[in-house]
Amino acid sequence: MSDLETFRAETREWLEENCPKEMRALSFHWEEAHKIYSTEAADLWRERMAARGWIAPMWPKEYGGGGLSREEAVVLSQEMQRIKATAASSGMGLTMIGPTLLEFGTEEQKQRHLPSICDGTIRWCQGYSEPGAGSDLAALQTRAVLEGDHFVINGQKIWTSGAQYADWMFALVRTDANASKHEGISFVLLDMHQDGVTVKPIRLISGSSPFCETFLDNAIAKREDLVGELNRGWSIGKRLLQFERSGIGGLSGAANRKKESKSNPMVETAKAYIGTQAGRLSDSEARDKVLKHTMTERAFQLTTKRVVQENQSGTTPGATTSIFKLVGSSLARDGAELKSELMGHQGLGWEGDGFSDHEIESTRGWLNSRAVTIYGGTNEVQMNIIAKRVLGLPD
Image (cartoon, rainbow, N blue to C red; front, side):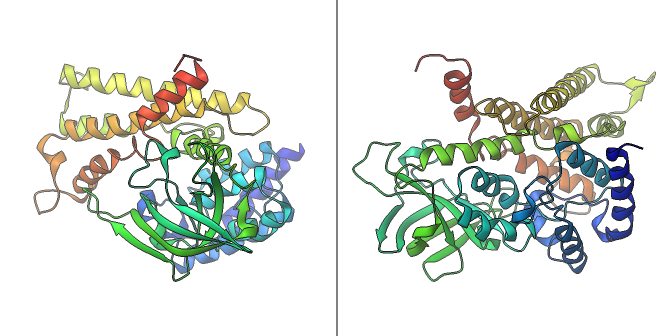
């Protein structure tokens, strides 16, 4: 038996014995993740996985990670999928600020912040967009003034996902008002549990409030929590966005799927609400739409899987992540819209006895999907990046 086969056998046995039943076969939108991870079963699962370093399996052991090779991490992911185990922890710590600190942080910053990400005890949020600086992020105006050993920060951030549950924020702030637009910006970390931070959730059309306004009134960030050089944070901020977009676009975990499900939710929805004739969907127009979407989705899955497998170093690609963000978010939006269309008037239910829980969930999912092409960088921003950084077209 090879070393990898031995690792698989040991991993399978450990997961079977240690993953609580309550943390298996769960289905939830990321907006509801805080509820899932606030249970006793979730705490137990997080504690057990953290003890092995498997919350961040490929991160170095000295920071609380598992130190696994890429091949071992793939095996772990496959075995978790086999028993339908929910990730022991999630969020921006693992997918965004953690990888950024591994690449740009000082040793002291890594030692101070990464272990609490690896054990799932600290939650992070992102302080990028502002009321006047969304797609044009470099126009941000939140000011940070260095006073001795700390920065004093004043300004407003918006669309800060999960800010009401976060312990820390990573933020882009302007530290030199006289510098050119993309200069004079610094990347800082700040504690959310301080008097200078006020969070106000924003209620969306879907009825949920995953995004927030965050007001910074003389908030404090320690000088030691400046990541990179003063006034040189723009490049770090852009690199973090590549980590974010690779996750939203579907690159994260794309190569870890051992096999795809034989069931196609879109086809099953069409069969249930439109019906079949002679073994195929009775409505030819609906049949064509389902076929086109299914083929595009499958092609996208295979492409992301191939890209991850070709990238043996395990690093996140650069500007090409915008391609996956653009295509992945558009697919998610179009899929939710098609599903609602296939369900007819039953796909428009908000509440009431005339609609099943599944139908109401689908309606809210359709409304939620409108945001996918906006957060993490709008589709228009992604197309600009692709044109300039990938295709090399002139401004």
